[in-house]
Structure formats: structure tokens, C-alpha cells
Image (cartoon, rainbow, N blue to C red):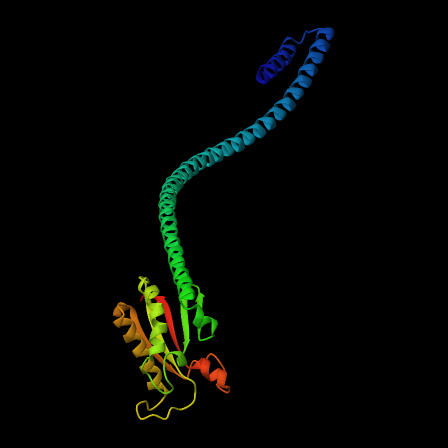
Length: 283
């Protein structure tokens, strides 16, 4: 377009020069036309420059957008890869959690079964314990009934604590002073216990010998140790002779070293000289 306008303007001027005989009016007309074309040419140049500038700007913006699009494509590819990896991780964790939940459910079921079994065992043990308590209580009641006269005289005390039953007898009702043989009155007292003790099936019967702290003067017993031991053994042997199982019997000597009263008084020493028959759990 621009070249065509320039060509027409130049051709017109050449025609005027060659002809030489163009009228003044025609010349003026052509000159004005040339000026118009020149003005239009200037506008076109300016517009061309503006369009060229806009074109450069658009190209730069296009290149920028193209670069951004390439970056977004890379980011999308990276995100797609991360998403896939995340899905794999989540799937692995989900599988692990599922296995853990299954294991926990199995453990809970096992524990519930174990708890049920333990509850049953506890109930059985509780029942057995109650039966044993009843048995000890029954033994206690029978001994109280059979020995009420000795208990009333303060010669015998019977105690029951946490399933442990103890018959405490002053030595004077069983033995003469300084002697270990059970005297006839003592045998009468022991005979009152025999029927009840024979009913005891799941307990051991321990006979303990105790003395006061007064040294013994006897050729037969060098010290209170020997006296307390001999008295306990003789009571155990007598119970065996009356039909008690010897495997359930035992004898122990404590001499003067487990007093229950003050040895400074006559009454205290009398209480410390004693035989204790105790029902204890079997080993």
C-alpha cells in the first residue's frame, strides 16, 4: 500500500514535468493531492510503527505465556507424579491399617475369651474359698462347743482370722510343771478336739510349744528350747495315735521367744507357757 502511494505520487510529478503544459489549476490540484497523499503516508508510517510496536509487545507476551504454559505443563506432570506416589502411600497405609485392625479385633476376641475363662476360674476359686471359710468356721464352732468349759475357765482360747484357726491352751492343763508328758487331764482335753480335727481334710495341723523366760532346772531338758519342743512333739504323737493323718501334723518349738504376755507377772508367765494348735494351709 505504502509503495503504491509513493509510486503514484512520483508518476504524477513526472507527468507534470514531461508535459510542461499542465494548467495552473491542474497543477494545484495535483499538488494538493500530493500533499494529501504525503499526509496519509505519514499517518500510515506512524500507524505502521505503532502496529510494529504492538506486534513486538504481543510477541513478547506470547513468548512469556508460552514459557508459562510450558512451566505449568511441567508442574502438572510433577503433580500427577506426586498424586500417583501419594495414592500408593495411602494404599499401603490403608492396607497396613486394615491388617492392624484385623489383628486388634483378633486380640480383643482372644482377650474376651481369656477374660471369660478367668472369670470362671475366679468364680470357682471364690466358691472354693467360701467353702474353706465355711469349713474353718464349722470347725471353730465345733471346737467352741466341745471345749466351752475350758474356755469359760480361761484355760483355752480359740481364735479365727482370715481362714486361720488357732487353739491356745495353757501348758498347766496339759503338763505338770517342768514335764513334757501329757497328763491324764490333758488327754481328756485333747480327746474333745479329736473328732473335729479328724474332719479337717485340706489343712495342716501345726502344734507349737512355747514357754516363759524362766530358765528350767532339769537334767532332762537343758533349756526351754528342749522343753517346748518335747511338749509339741508329744501332743503331735498323741494326735497321731488317735487316728489323725501324720502327714498333716507338724511340731515346732519357740521356747520363750514368742511371748503373748508380760513375763514380769505370774499371770503373764502362765499365758506364755502354752501349746498352740493351728490349722494352716497345706504346702
